[in-house]
Image 1: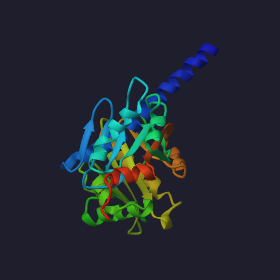
Image 2 (image 1 turned 180 degrees about the vertical axis):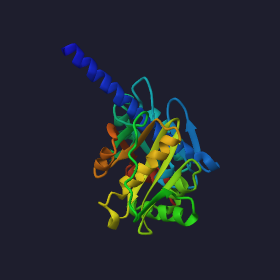
Image 3 (image 1 turned 135 degrees about the vertical axis):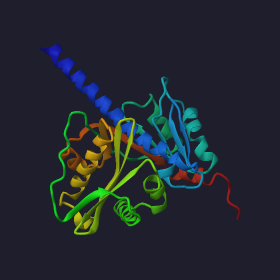
Image 4 (image 1 turned 90 degrees about the vertical axis):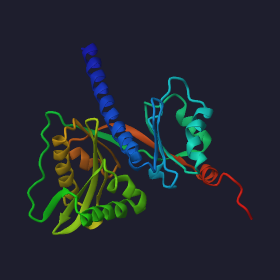
Length: 284
């Protein structure tokens, strides 16, 4: 019996690994899609995904993800990964999925001046053979994809308001991005919640799920997610993936999402931020 138990646990771990791969794929596809207009430079190699936007200092538009290697990482290798960002004075964020990173990467990131600022939980939902419950009928609630200019702008306002983000980079990230679909929930005709979704490689990635404070705890975000999940299945997605804050994990668990991995979001500390943004002595 002990051998059987060990094998079952091993299969469960393999399943979680595959779901974690789906979450990482969703985030990489989202950042890679920023190259849609040529303003952002995207390098997608077996070693890493690097996104550099010379026209913006915003961390949303400058990032390094999915860094891989077979040998322990050296400081020189981390500096080489950061070099394109240093060249244009644009600080990046660096995402790593705990357990999949090369040996020594976290220590080397700390040595060069990067610091952890977030540890979101990766969650995924298999969509093959799993019927997604449609949102409950509610005459006061209108759910759907935002297509009209006013609806798209309302969704953008909700996202930037809830997450305290600058509108310009967020507009490039999702609203102007042809790879993303924007969804909006109206409560009695008033914009209440929003999210964006991208389907890539059979993975439906969900981002910026936001509800204005006065509309929370009414099931609006859950209903909007259910609506978008139905669309994801119709578009051929086999898995839905997202990252969740501790506050939002309960919402996604009710929808059937499974916690499968943890990410660390690193950003430059004060000294490194200054060194990247202002590499030359300022004239007096």
